[in-house]
Image (cartoon, rainbow, N blue to C red; front, side):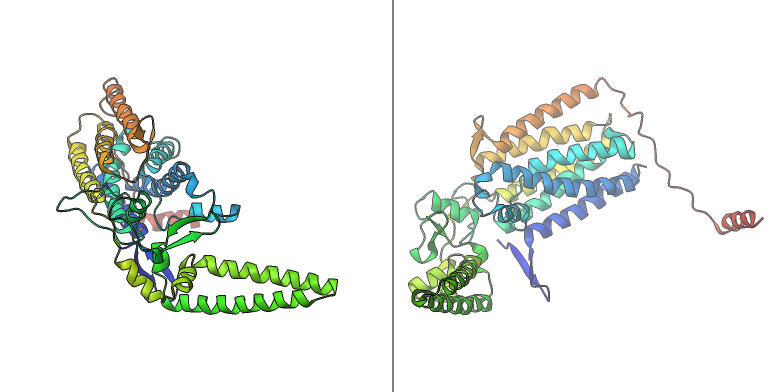
Length: 404
């Protein structure tokens, strides 16, 4: 597990592994689709345009579905601005594939039909194998991020995620045997009054930053105590009002400083620990062994991509490849959901992904039925010819005619 690849020099920003794998997957998938288009005598530029449409729609759709599905995680983040910032922060994961897949299909179909005005069936067939390939890269990002994990198992290839990972936190919350944590790692979240473990992000903060925050908190605490003492001695109403405003501002800054590294300062002070000692204690606690469902999904998506690519060159009707994607990938996802542990069973007896997988498989089967009543080759599937380049002699003649 490596949620952060490294910190970008001079910018002070972390490079998340999940986002990096998404970008690599997008680039590899779009290049593969463009090469398939060129070899098929389709327009690679149309495929590139669809790729960028898919990137935007995919991220928005994935995030939208996750936020709707897990709204309870966002509604108590603070005021409207803080909730909005939490919603758009995708650096730590929090995406659901089918939300992005559905919105991407809708956006690409609209783009191909009304903007590019080309064959839907043909170009969707070109793109379909790359969609599965991109998913394979995304699942590597899931493994590095620690999300989309499986249930507890004792298989030789089971994986254990570190402290603060989604798997470890869920197992602690479910009070599974051997998943307990030392009290030094658990604090009371003031807004809710609930006990919760430190987050993995806080434990990756540089020690220098924690030291600076400790100094700031100490200074603000001292200033707050001094203002409080002055307020208790003040007799003038104007003076009391001024000190009350200053005290409120100091308290606001103090709370903000504590919340920036929520839990760390409280636990360090309560147990007399240094930040390095807290990290050492956290390193002792890992999740119970779980199915590496991210790897199962990656291998499955890669095999589906290769299968769809083979089907593309052997198809007898335009549209068969994208319909095959709608049938095969959801079936694979449905089976993997059986051993995944991160999605609740909350939709008609299924997880939301299983429910959508069933719907998509039905849509794919209906698509095959419709294709049998359509011409094998789409009427709009015309070979693309690049525009002729103007040679020197042609340009010269054109300029001569202009001068004349």
